[in-house]
Length: 122
Image 1 (cartoon, rainbow, N blue to C red):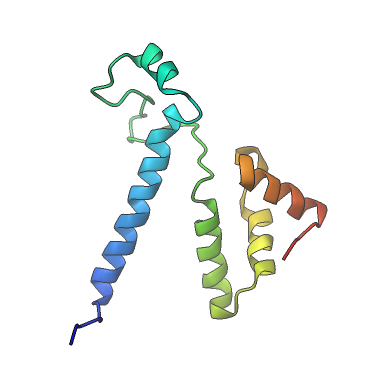
Image 2 (cartoon, one colour):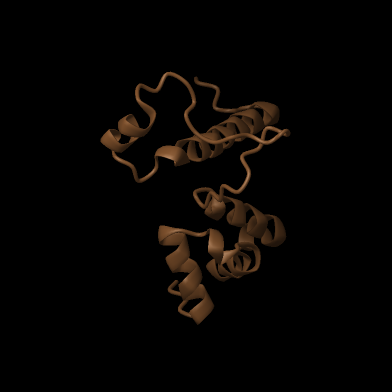
């Protein structure tokens, strides 16, 4: 029989590590987002080092919005506040409360605009 149980600390570390890796990949990859290989090569040449942002003294990348993880973060807040009874309306309210529309792009921007107009399609 296979043991399917996992210790709480191991589960936390797997989830934390996976999410941290996703955030890092999204942020670090933003320099190349929506650019072709040819554009990147002509701007940076052969890339053999990180070719992007300038970090501040604390190691942060200033002024880079990243909407790729917003849904997950909003869902976590809504879950913390409502438990397993969370609804799509709870999540939509959190989006409107916590996300600055100026830092949304593509699908997230469309969702925020629809939420603001009251076009909640659930």
